[in-house]
Length: 255
Ligand SMILES: Cc1cc2nc3c(=O)[nH]c(=O)nc-3n(C[C@H](O)[C@H](O)[C@H](O)COP(=O)(O)O)c2cc1C
Image 1: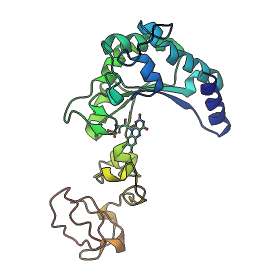
Image 2: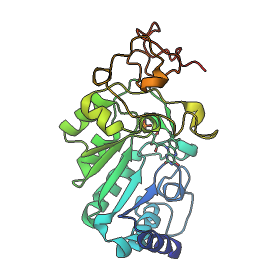
Image 3: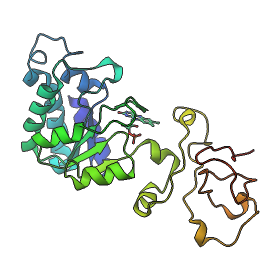
Image 4: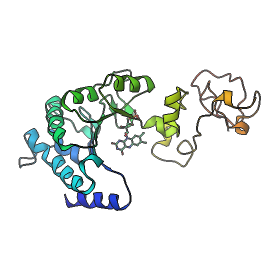
């Protein structure tokens, strides 16, 4: 537990505004929380109160350093990452959410189970986790996992989340908030660049430049004007207008 407090102190000294305890996706805190992994028979295993003890003690180390309103908590109710799961997730996470209400945390960051790690498990399935937690938790909720622009606006409008977090779309859209704000097209991400390689497909994506705001470039190489093709979503060095590729094909990224 001392390590948690020490890490928080280092983060504070380094100038961080707050800290998030990772209680999701099969990390240590999650392993304690869910009964699929926690087989302990001591005060840290068995009942949900016991399984949540590690998490609550860790929060108890972080809160004095940053203040509760600067500490967030990430959870993945019904998540299956690393085969960490629970026999009764509704009971476990419902109890936990209610227990957390009095702490005054900055937020709960809830990963939807339609996502496993960085992959979509259930394509087209509606998000359920934040709405479930909302029934038990009155504080700020950040929903994450498989959201697009429309779903993000919907879940906030419905009051089941206060914010929506994005991961994969951010990897290929450095200006993602602006694109979402304006409804601009998103550049497809490159899964093969998630976990390795160099800057290609990782940090070389450009901000969106609306074509209308650019000078006439019909027939000009896109490398010259730096624009992004609204049809295929990419900038190809030899790309010219009009794009002849099907939408999302990425076929016009030529070397
Ligand atoms: C490259 C990459 C690395 C990630 N690393 C982690 C990680 O270390 N821990 C974690 O809990 N989730 C990790 N995630 C999962 C994301 O935090 C997020 O929950 C997931 O991608 C679903 O959100 P999205 O649909 O907006 O991408 C990672 C995702 C990506 C794409």
